Length: 514
Image (tube, rainbow, N blue to C red; front, side):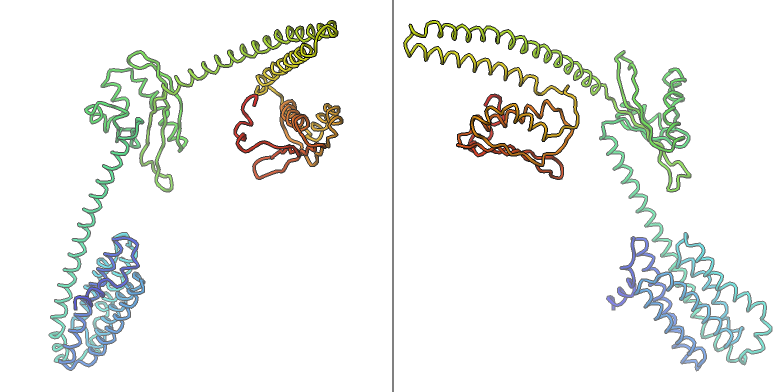
C-alpha cells in the first residue's frame, strides 16, 4: 500500500528540472489523491442515498480525474492542473443544475476558486487569475439567475436528502484544502530557509575565494558605496568593516585627505558605467613611504540580463611595481648585452684582420724559403715546409670561419623575396672548378620563391653544397637540392651520394666547428 501511494505522489516527478518543480508536482499529486478519496466517498454516499444523477456525475468526474493522473505521468503538469480546475467547475455546475440550487452544491465553486492558489506558483499569476475566474464567474451567474434555476428544482424532500449527504463532503473538502495550503506554505518556508542557507554558504565561499586572490578587489553598489573589500585591498580589518556602506569621499574625509583625490579615484568607475564595459589603466604613484609604485587599476560593471540595471561594480588593483622593475632591468641587461656583442664583433673582426696578415706573411715566407733553398733541402725538410704552409692556410680558414660564424646570426639582414633556383645557380657557378675537377653532377629543381635574407640562405647552401662535393668519396659525386611544403613550413634537403654521417654523430652535426 505504501509503495502504491509513493508511486501516486511521485507521478511525473522525474520530468522536473529542479527540486522546486519536483515538490510542486508531488503537491499536485497529493491534492489529486485527497480529491479522489473524497470523490469515492461521495459516490458511496450517493449510491446509498439512491441519488442516481449525483452518482453518475461523480463517476464521470472520477474517470476524468484518472485522465488527469495520466497527464501527470506524461509530464503535462500545467495541462493537468488546468484540466482538473475546469472539470471540477463543470462538474459542480452540472450537479447544481440537476439537483437544485438549494442543495448548496453551488457553494463548492467558492472552495474550487481557492485551489489555483495551491496548484500554481505565485509567479504564474495569469494561471491563478484564470483558475479563480473559472469558479467565480459561474457562481455569480447562479446567484444572479437564482429565480430561473429555482423553477427546475427537485422536490424539497430530495433536496434536503442531498444537502445532508454532501454536508460531510464540503467539510472534508475544506479541511483537505486547509491542510494542503498549510503543507505548501510549510514547504515554502523550508525551501526559503534552504535557499537562504545555500546563498549564505555561496557568499562565504566566494568571499574566501576573493580573499585568496592576491589582487585588491572591492565592489560598489549603484551609488558607489563599498559593499565588499578584500584584505589585499585594505589590510586593516576594522577599516574594512567601517568602509562598508561608505563612499570614497567619506573615506577620504575620515583619513583627513584631500577630497579631490576621491573624485580622481572614482573617474575609472564612472568611465566603466558610462561605457558599460570593463575599463583598465596603468597608474604610477608615490606611496606613504615615499616609494614610487606602479599598479593596474580596473573597473568592471555587472548588469542584469538586459543591461537595464546596474547590479554591482567591481574595482580591482594589481601592484606591478616588481614587474616594471624587472622589465626595466631586462632592458638594461639587453642594452648592455647588445653593447658587449658589438664590442665582441669589433674584437673578432679586428682580431681576424690582424691575424690574417701575419699568417699570410708566414705562408709567403715559407714558400719563398722553399723555392730559394729547394736544391739545398732534403725531402723531409721540404715536406715539413709543405705541412707548415697547409697548417697556416687551415688556420687562416679557421679564423675566417670564426668571423663568419660571429656575424651569421645577426638580425640586420634585409628580408626580400628570394628565388632559390637563382641562389643555387650562383653557388654552382662559383664552384664550377671543383665540380668539373670531381666530375660531379648538380641537380636542383622546383625550388620556391620565399621571403628571407639572401645572404643567410646563400651561406647555408654554399657550405652544404661545397661540403657535399669536397668530401664526397664517390667516383662521380651527385648533389641533389630540393624542397617540399608541409602544413606549417618548407623543408629543404641537400643530399649527396657520399658515405653520409654515422647515426652516433647526428647530435654533433650542428655543434660549432664539428
